[in-house]
Amino acid sequence: MEVGYPFERCLNYIGGRWAEPTGGRFAPNINPATGEVLCEWPLSTPADVDAAVQAAEAAQRRWRLVPAPERAKVLMRVGDLLRERKEKLARTLTMEMGKVLEEARGEVQEAIDMAYYMAGEGRRLFGQTTPSELPDKFAMSVRVPVGVVGLITPWNFPIAIASWKSLPAIVAGNAVVWKPAEDTPLLAREFVRIYEEAGLPAGVMNLVFGEGPVVGDAMVEHPGIQVISFTGSTETGRIIASKAGAKLKRVSLEMGGKNAILVMEDANLPLAVEAILWSGYGTSGQRCTATSRVIVQRSVKEKLEQMLVPRVEALKVGDGLDETVRVGPVIHGEALENIHRYVQIGLDEGARLLTGGKILRDGDLARGFYYAPTLFTDVTPSMRIAREEIFGPVVSIIPVDTFEEAIAVNNDVSYGLSSAIFTQDVNRVFAAMRDLDTGIVYVNAGTTGAEIHLPFGGTKATGNGHRDSGTAALDVFTEWRAIYVDYSGRLQRAQIDNN
Ligand code: NDP
Image (cartoon, rainbow, N blue to C red; front, side, top):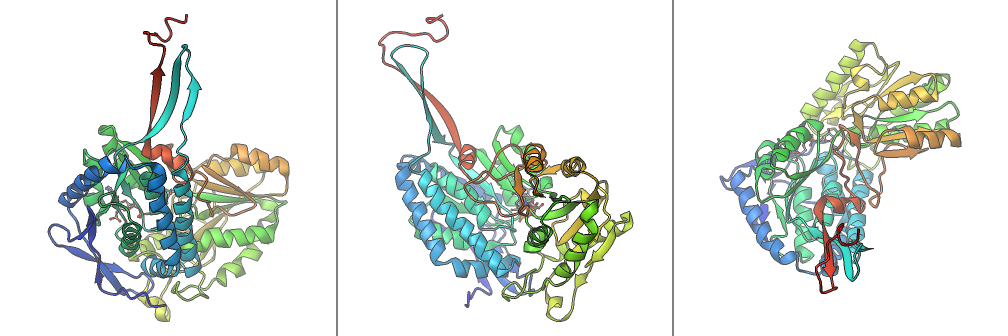
């Protein structure tokens, strides 16, 4: 299938119109598999952000008055259009950020699922009713939109994460200003086109391309934006949180991970191997939930390594558009160098390289950014490769003696996104469900594969207590309003007249 984008120019979408950025500057978007330029995207300015916020403010004043079930009808059409265009979107996704086609299709499906799920919320958006402590008085709470929300998203899940944030924001009656990552402008534009075609009123969704420290920062600073929902690195999240905190803005942060699979001595080892391959090397290790540590009981370590190494070596690396490829490129040259630097650090720290550990430059691979699927063993919990996020196809095996030690090693990192345990022992399963300190826990499955109707996010340096996805996402984009209706016809004083 031809997607036919090369050399197109993406534009901002502000107040329902596709607009050139002020200043007229653009930058290229590169296919990481081939080095080919796919399109140009606007280097927007704070003036563009301001125009988007003004358009959003005007639109939101009307949108909040549209009944939520009517707002939801737009989301239903968004779901239908995403479904119709699934294959084209998936191919574009693969070309823009490199993940293999099968995974790209899965990512688009996630956005489809989210559209239908959040459309359902249009008929729920439940609040509470509760008895008043006073007679002839009614008490309830309702969700109200916050106003204009700012979304700042990363390149590794360019449509899934955008859907997790924009769909609940819109169904709840907010207007959106969205800054996508610079590496995935085409997906952002296609998603916004779908909102437009679905009949979303002008100004409810506004798209401003640009560099994080310019456009993202202008959104964080803008007084017209009440909430910032961000997914990206912990480093950037810290900057955003401190700036927004000073302005008393609500900030929802989803950041890095250092996720582990625990393999106990009674584990189904062939199943654990499949999970390590899928969660460790899928999306070339560039998922926030990617497995980067395997914490294994020493008694099965050697057997696990013997099973794993040939399978890692058999993973075909290449352009994700080739359906036989299992591991695509990483996002850009800088990421490639960073991954290689970590491999050197691991070697210097005394970790033993079982396979991989090199940049791939043979034949066609020289045109893109490819790293060999890499497996270290005899890694200790204090090594940097066991503690810092690498965001590439590098997995470290950490041997431990006991279940309790495995849990302690899992928890002894600054991040807390996802963890998994392989065991047949029901007692250990329940202890792990209680004691693993991550926001997501899997039993007998890898660390990736979140479903859209459950809350997504993590603890410690991964997040700040908010969640994407599921109904929890509505908490980010709504305020609770407590309402009391006194129908007694007299002044009734709570805590005084009834005590
Ligand atoms: P970044 O933090 O660099 O970028 C994320 C977004 O923030 C991009 O849109 C970026 O813009 C923008 N940005 C950058 N600097 C600023 C700033 N000063 N102010 C406002 N916005 C800014 O992360 P990456 O895109 O490199 O994504 C990879 C990282 O994200 C990994 O560490 C990964 O673990 C994490 N991640 C976490 C997820 C989670 O749910 N926990 C999910 C996905 C990724 P630009 O593109 O222009 O740089």
